[in-house]
Length: 259
Image (cartoon, rainbow, N blue to C red; front, side):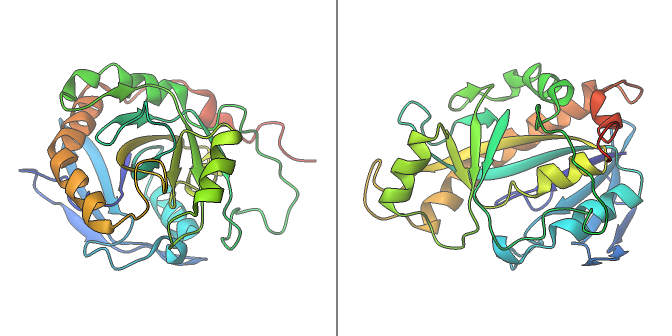
């Protein structure tokens, strides 16, 4: 089964597909966000809006462990996530779509692992699944508005506030390309469950002080509304061309991780 986690502005991708079932998974970490089950091109899909369907969950209150556990428990083995992000570079303008390949984690108040009671050191030398990334990149012709960039370093902060000008400068100095509040620990939790995971990041704004002093959510949602159809088309084309029988190192990510 293929899992889709929708970020800001992506609350439903079913189009004309018949929804088979809606469910909330009860996990050892609490309840997951609601999952919709349906089919695209004959393939089983589990769609989850990260912030809930009415965007009522702020980034620091999302139950990332319950969401990933829940998807894994219904046999999802690969996840395409979407994230609205800010840009740290003028050459990555709003409306760009970026397939991130690495991250810097500045979150501090989140439960980040399933392994609280055992010593497991999961490898993240390739933090995002390159097989799945390449599958998305192969369908980049679905994107016609704005740039499509196939690499980027994602910096994740707790939020819910936007970052300060000094923080922006620090993240730039450290080599970050994009800023977001929801990409982690989601990506690492998926790796701990040996699931393929890739993120389609949509640039909704420049970071504070890069283009202006004040940011508002209005501009974020305006960009996401304009890009919504394009992002969903990219997801559909990727699903249609994804092989259900595949080999990937993500599926054995825990090999050699225990002491």
